[in-house]
Image (cartoon, rainbow, N blue to C red; front, side, top):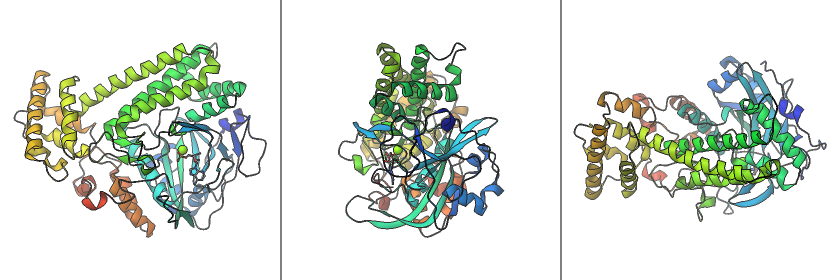
Length: 516
Ligand code: AMP
Ligand code: MG
């Protein structure tokens, strides 16, 4: 396996001078060099051929014992420079101080003709940032991260990528619901890929420590490395910082629109889990909306306040951006342009959301009354959002019949709901007529933005159940199905089915904790 590393992050930025691996506060540095832990018996569960292709690896490179050794952390390739980075963050609204890569180890940056990819192991052992935890990860959460990263990519949602899922052959103890029932689970390591794993919390940490020179050097580095189009020939100045913050706001707005489009709930939108690239990052207790409920969160750790519920994600995106803005004040010495960018975020989100809703409905233009009516309709009965929109694409716009939507309802619609649906469909048909939407192309255009296949919570759990017994067939089948989320795949219809009753309350399906 041949990979070329250029490691600009570690060569451009200051390292922690301490190289011993013990937990500590790390000041005046962006990262600490650390070696991944060695594991007993690495074995490949699955790999993404598209992610591998991005760094020039062919299937035959990935199906070797060497690949499993390297991406479990047992062997370091020539040119790698393993390190864990230092960041802080607001967790559930409160400043938490130093967090950092507690169980993530960056191996190095692969340079390719199209760009660069940082390779990062998650679950490869403790780092100076592990605090009181073990630096490890279990199979269930790793499988969820691996599959969902690639599913999101194929859905067209910005995301970090996942190269591989490898079991370590070692047990990891977790108290899944934090209720005093620790159990040993299979350990696993995921290799993630992104041009950059820089989070809002990296900037926050430097500012919290008043390391302003380093904040400037780091921000300059991040802009030059991943936002080069913003850098004028005269170099980086105050206006460039403002332009960059604006760009992060715009990317975050787009990401929020995309999550809302596909019904994704991240579950832990802490500022340390926000990428400056505007990618979905850190898949933990995330979930997919089954029943359309704006108040839903899969994260039992957040059950009381529901801070990170589906409908609040765009607002939290703005709150998180405000924390990033606060961290940038020392570079800009003025809050007005930052506040302006935050206002623009809200406007861009709203405009993007309207366009997205119009596209989901196959409309030529957004119609506020119609969409408000729809949002109301979707909450009248337990309705599967994914199936609803696919069914809606099939409705005859010349003579719409609410029967076409039956599949979307959990437990079947009441007479009242059915009547409401029929009324709304009549208005929908009238708007389509008014906007001169072509019936011949409407369903194809809707199906291009309304996925048929998402990683349904209970289906991920079925793959986990099998994988825990050493059977990785379903994991690999899902990886394949989710490569074409917008296509009808009649042979895989079962993976588009709505949540069965047994999964309603089963832990791991609609209820997840941060334990991973
Ligand atoms: P999260 O919000 O789950 O992404 O993680 C919050 C912080 O906890 C990050 O700094 C993680 O690196 C750290 N963390 C989570 N799980 C572990 C673990 N098992 N060992 C070490 N650090 C962890
Ligand atoms: Mg995190």
